[in-house]
Image (cartoon, chains in turn yellow, orange):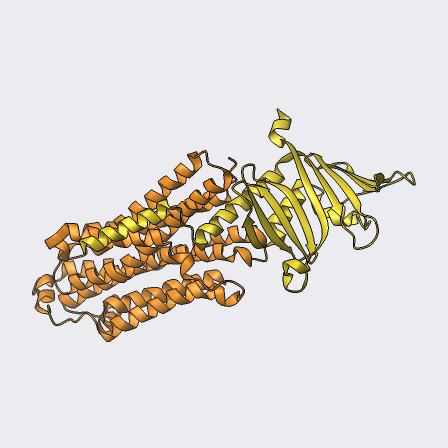
Length: 211
Length: 314
């Protein structure tokens, strides 16, 4: 009995020191990372998201989304290196401009932005919007550890019928890249067609901006 | 819905634990005595024990339900339609069953106090201990009710653990992987066994409840230390997160195994010792263990909750 007791304690101790993880530990780890990522995105000061829409046919569109301040975003849509549309989101409202036709319209809220050119990046218009999607809309489908510093999370975005693949820097807890795919039948990787590719460039946090 | 299941879990679990320790006739007599029917001192004393045991069982069932509900909320991460915010809500709501446990426990203590007072006022004829001692050897532990109680309790636990997997067939069917973190299970069981062996000849009077509570407390504290070391470590992102998560799983699993051990082994054995007159009443150590440890487990759940939802940056 004494031997059994000692054997159980020693085995348990060795397994614990060996860093064994079960499903519960995996879930705790994943949830902790996602909450931190969400907070980092929400508290972001100046971030530039460079996005590229990958169409099946025709020329691709590139987007530069700059989160300049809380509630302030500057968006440029380019086709073949030419700016074709801009969107200025601020506390005063939303201004949409067409530099080619030299027109400008103002709208009150994002729900009134119906131009299909902007639709692929509507989730990226501010840190709050992206964090809200991550917190409340997207369903986690899986995650994969790339190395000790980066982990990839796969989400299902049921609103748009897409899969979102987000690569996270585990030290800073910030997204590095994001890929969006049309969800194929059975969501098998080979059948996924990429529609949007985003790279995040993080500069400073909000608190640092204020000091 | 989850809250309703929590109430069902606490009520049915409390009933199962009552069946493990008491016969149907003793349970019936306890209700009659609570309703004001007179009885012999020995019978009233058994009824007192029943109501105290009920309070203990409901309180511990509430804490166990909270632990299981907390784990099930974490298990819903990949199928929650409300994202991680819904998982956090589920984790926070997991504390509700412990409120049911406290309320039901308090309700059970009322008849116990009244019967104790009645017992104190009764003229002393045959002493309660003598009456209990006279029935020593006539009470077999494995009665029909005991077996039914154990089966009911195990089915209830298994159903609660399996239920999330039935609603999500895509999940790999491994309910045990969520509740049993093997390092914690081995250390708690081994530690409890070691406690009993150290006590030696006095083991007959040793409250197994207290042994489980102490080892589970030690295990949980080990987990807390590991969490703190994880935060202090200068490791790369994933290594640090992994260590902290494993330590949190260790804490939760220690609490789960400790509570289950107290309810399935410690409490029934002690109830039997009182009923057969081997001890006068549940020991103070045991009472402290079943009063305090569930509360400690709930505090650990709250700490884990805050550790998970609080953004951390290395």
